[in-house]
Image 1 (tube, rainbow, N blue to C red):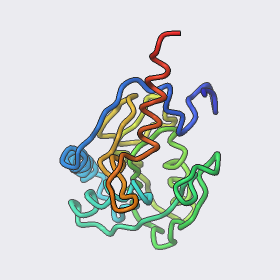
Image 2: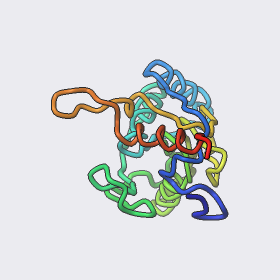
Image 3: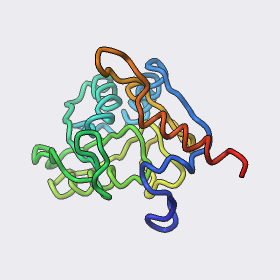
Amino acid sequence: MVGDQGGRPRPYDYSHRFGVRRLGWDEAATLAQSLAERLEGDRPDVVIGVARAGAFPAFVIASALRRELLVVRLSRRVDEEVVFEHPVWRVPVPPTVAGKVVAVVDEIADSDETLECLRRAAIEQGAARIVTVALAAHSWAQPQPDLVALASDELVVFPWDERILAGGRWIPLPEVEDAIGAQRRREEPG
């Protein structure tokens, strides 16, 4: 399904991605560390991670830079099911960001709607300056984050999304399996 805004792919529509890029824990940590290195010159006072998955790179960045870490919840999901077309606030940006340089971090910029909502919320709370950061970004994300560690139009599978614990067993995350299946179906002839 294509065409949510300006012909860009809709979030969570995996059929248009080409290839799969699986990141291990070490590679994800290395990418987050590279973002910390690039962000250091911006001298953020606070790092805000978008829970859940954006909290992983945000934690690495905040730890590396020895900055305060805040976690917000902004998502299209409820109980892991996508139920909203646009992100909905669950835990907002706190007013403590007023007057500070804020780095807002998510794991991937797909539509980039989440980071843009977070950026606007930080401005509304009086942040002096905001730097948007994503571990990975697709070419169609608009606007693009200020800092990106991995630019790819592949289906990026993060280590925290590789497997889930279900009934005492580790199984592949069904959403990832469905996304890979959607790619296969698209590539099959006729």
